[in-house]
Length: 144
Image 1 (tube, rainbow, N blue to C red):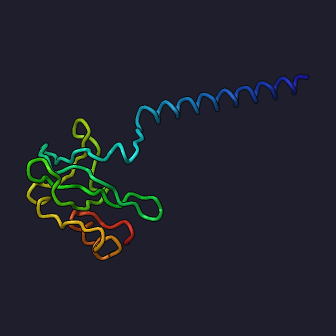
Image 2 (cartoon, rainbow, N blue to C red; image 1 turned 90 degrees about the vertical axis):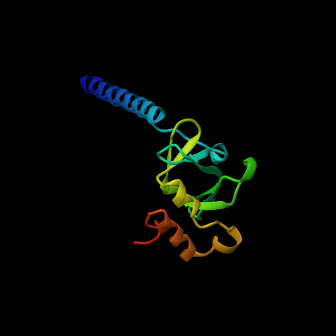
């Protein structure tokens, strides 16, 4: 009988610890992590650290493993119309900057000179993708 009570007490303590741990993990995840659908992120603005407007999030390129490889950003155009698009490695962007925006650590002048994106010509070209990563100062994740 004493063994049965000890076993029940041990199982109860383990169960309580599991519930407490799960509850803590859920609270931690909900307070520090946010999930977004890609559709929500389209149309977010892109600014630099100085708060200068660089463009607007237009689309995303995802590889066969489900990783976001590029964010497609439209440069400012004439009279509010979207300008030409550029591909920016997703790792180069940070979320934030106030409101619905991303931050890119790049001057407006350098971003204006970024290589333009033509999905028909470049999307299947690994050399082009590696050059774009390097333009933004990031080592391509598929290389050593």
